[in-house]
Length: 357
Image (cartoon, rainbow, N blue to C red; front, side):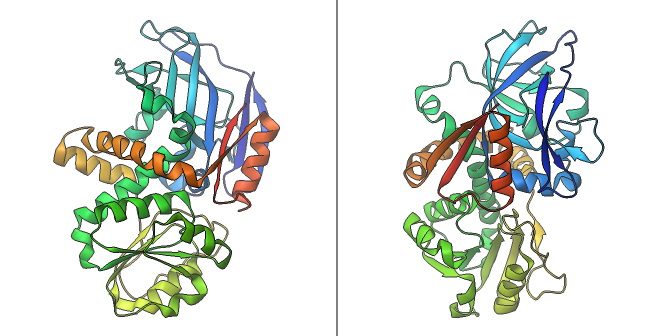
């Protein structure tokens, strides 16, 4: 049997554990047991944008109206009818919140493969790639949990930073990052500070100000209620991780036409109302990382941006690991409880959640 956490596709705070009959393998397929995976606010964003971007289509279930939220983590091949993939092979990549997954390996290399299952072929390619990790170099093997927790978020952060750089910073003097306590936010702050082209300001709730200041990644940390303290004439890029329409509207109305780009990334405040459409400044636009990755593949050659991101992420993890406590939990009930806390906004920002069935 396959154990899954299914989420209501229109009311994502509703979830349930189900059992499904595990399908038999066809020739060329493998069965991968999901071993250890991370749960972050990023996964809540996947659920929220599941219809628009297609996240529900990666790991479909037959029950109408319900779906399996993708997560990042490790899996072990426990059954194989693919000649190139041995039982015991370890993979890192995109998995369902489920005990196992059937894959159809294609483009198999020494260190990677692609899931060529028919239903995934039209989905963003970056999510169908898996790293083969049995022979990982020691620096990467040493940060296995952080890889699952931080690499997807840091890669998004890295690509956003590259997107801003690719547009010459949109002519802005500073970057405002909403929901500054989220991991994608402080990853972006890290990369922006490393590049050093613009001032970095974190916007956060009053309860998280001390945590965000202690990160040491922002030039300034401002509570949402103190937004008026910022000089409104400063040309700014706004990167919104919250999805909170009130925050987005407040930033746009304060800075007006000085908002030179408004980049919507996540939805840490997923239950809040969305922003109105008639805001001053640049119109908010959803950021789709695979789009920028595809552009850089065309600019620099396939895989160059992602290789640079991996190298940068290893260095970033070494710094950020001291600012986070990794918490492990096992079993279907623990997975369900962790999801309920994450979607309910009850997971502290300094916690990294690693789960297994």
